Image 1 (cartoon, rainbow, N blue to C red):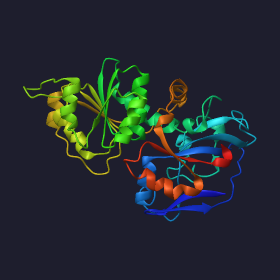
Image 2 (image 1 turned 90 degrees about the horizontal axis):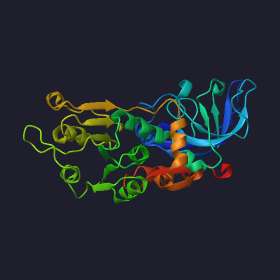
Image 3 (image 1 turned 60 degrees about the vertical axis):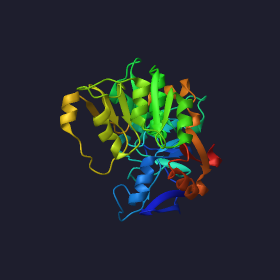
Image 4 (image 1 turned 45 degrees about the vertical axis):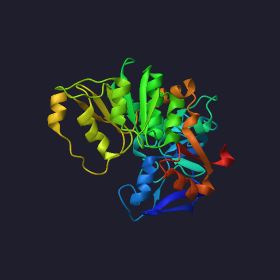
Length: 337
């Protein structure tokens, strides 16, 4: 079978490998769909997890599929079970520096007998939608960091897949005033479908002026600040964090879920004076159950803007690199659907 590997910076290949066979405690999943993640794009740019290594790196971690085989010590799974993957559970680091990757027809999940690697899916949930569980979990964790209340006014910077996931979670939590901010009109349209009550196109409008108009002003030492209660930074744009310090009202909260590779200068005088809260959000809740249940309550399929077969991975990757292209780019294993 074929699997996607990174061989160096911007060197991605569809390599031929042997099909996996499970050990006594392992499972093999017949992959149905696997999404391209922003983290995947970073790995491709760097040439690996943190740069090139002696061995190519397997890619792909946002996936759903069907259990195809299990070892004789696996009691918690049966062949034919529809499942979604937690890629980092048990140190497997699937698609994140581990030996296995999800952009392939079949995937070996080591020590599946220990549980919390593969989670069952309801029959009603389409596989490509189920493959959104992992990014939805990332967005859910980002929302958890700001501990939103239904009456909060919330702004989400960045309407890529993680920002869109956060917007969907905020809607599910009953937050009635959510503003999405992005440079792409296409992504902002998806954000409105998923629950954003208002949007700001930062390519032609100052987002902070717009936030003061939408959420009112809350002066600090006589200076007008945005009345927004909480923010999620999912854009990866370094200036957003500095602008938050300058424009946020007192006691505002910020959850940073986007990757920022470079150091960012932060005025802790402003953090102190305004009593701001800044929290990082990494990965997702340990238990996927909440994310799976949310996917059954709400239709998040609008998040998927493009679909490609594995054979066209290069074309899919090029599209995923274009931040204006839309939402999630999904790779479908057509023979496994």
